[in-house]
Every structure is written in structure tokens, then in C-alpha cells.
Length: 261
Image (tube, rainbow, N blue to C red; front, side, top):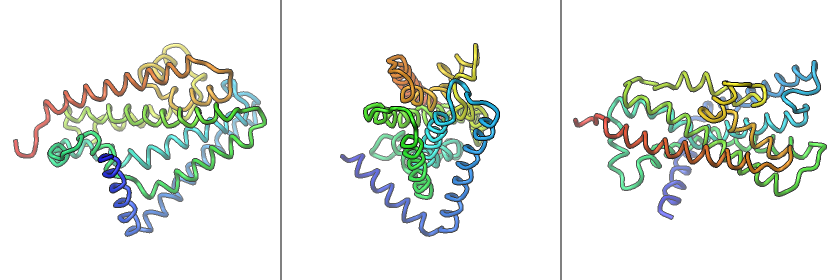
């Protein structure tokens, strides 16, 4: 309950701060809406030349697109601002501020900045998920839809864990961005159906850098026959990445040079 009260305080403060910069608030909303439109237009153009892509028709692809848009919006709202600042906190010694607080430093660093200007986009993304599911001509059970939403949230955690691991390289490289540029270059694979990747690339983006798992696997679970393999893979990758995150975090703190050192 202490952590919940603290997080509610984070959210209230973020909304208060966002209202002081209203132009920035609405500009970010508009920017993300344009991004969403581009995603649907991109695949619509492809489907002018084919009926099936990676085993999915256009209705199924809309569910996949709205799924990764939801993951992106949820990450931008909850985690992204915090992740962005991590390398700078490490390099400038600002991490001291978080390490001296009577709460988990990783919790504080990961959730302190709630992006109120992205919250409206999260609502829009949620509406897109509802629209893509409600207009789908096939049969979708309420249980599968519920689990699908949970899997999208799990996909957001996978995205955050992977991103944070790339950024924590700053403990050793002293880079102002860590390996953020590498991460963003590879992260676009989340926006493509996993079945377009074959061989080594498929293994890489499923079991090492699980971008194909984040949005494609929830869509497979919703649209296809029940598969326990999907649930096991997503749960397994979440446990592995969380464990890796905790280990690398502790190792990074052991080599961290504080502002007072």
C-alpha cells in the first residue's frame, strides 16, 4: 500500500506539471495520432497487393497493429520518460538521489515520471484495440479477449525490461545514451508480424531480443487455437528478463561512481 500511495502521488504530480505546458501536451498527442495513422496506412497499402500477410488477413492485421500501438502507448505513459533519463542519472551522479530514498531505487527510477501527455494517447490506443476486436468478423471469446489484454500488458513489461537492460550499459560505457540507439533500431521489429522472420532472425527476436513475442504472440493467442506454448514463452521470457534486469542492476550499482566519490 505504501508503494501504491507513492505511485498515485507520482501520477497526480505528473498531471499537474503537464498542465503547465499545454502546447507540449497537445503537440505530443497530435504527433502520436499521426504515428497511429501511418501504421494503418502502411499495412493497408500492402493489402492492396495481397490478401494474406504472415498468415493474417487485413482484419487480423488490424488487431496486431492496434496491439503494438497499445504497447507503445502504455510504455510511453508509464515507463518511457524514466528510461530516457537513466544514462544521465548514472553519468552525472544523480543516481545518489534515488539510492538514498527509503523505497526500492529501481521502483523509484522506473515509475517516478508518469507521462500525463501520453495518457490521452493510451486512451486512444485502447479505443483502437476495442475497435479492431469489435469489428472482427470471427468468433472471439470473452476469456480470450481478457487474456489478450493481459498479454499486451505483459508485452509492455518485456519492452521495458529490454529497453532498461540496453540503457544500463551506461554503468560501464559512461555513454550519455547507453545503447539506446541500438535498441530503437532493433525495436521496430515489434511492429512486424513474427512469421515474416525465418531461421536465425526468428530465434533472435523470440528468445534473445523478444520483440516478436511482445505483440505478435498476444495476437496469435487471440486469433488462433489455444496454445499453451504462447503463454509459457511469454511468461518464461518475462521471468528471464526480469532476473537479468535485477542482476545487471546490482552489478551496475557495484561499479557506480556517485557524485560524492
